[in-house]
Length: 126
Image (cartoon, rainbow, N blue to C red):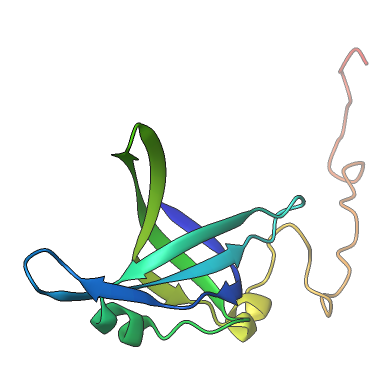
């Protein structure tokens, strides 16, 4: 799955040691979409290497690719949203992409077509 938005919070990292004696680290982030009704999602990045590789900062525009999973603990279920890829969005690149539904600002006006000059006889009933 994928979600695009702006990072609005970077939470404190958590860590510990697994049952097998291996250290682990996880950090959570909150991203907000740019929809008419913005949505927020808290996701985590697992592993110190991934946390350092992604280096996510507050205010960055990101596309976050993630997996959703649920876990049961003491009869309750909890969702886990874990990012596996993060792409930074360049705001200048977004602004320079023209919207095809609007004509360019500096475009010359196109004169209306003159169909009367080519029609010799109009035999349509309307």
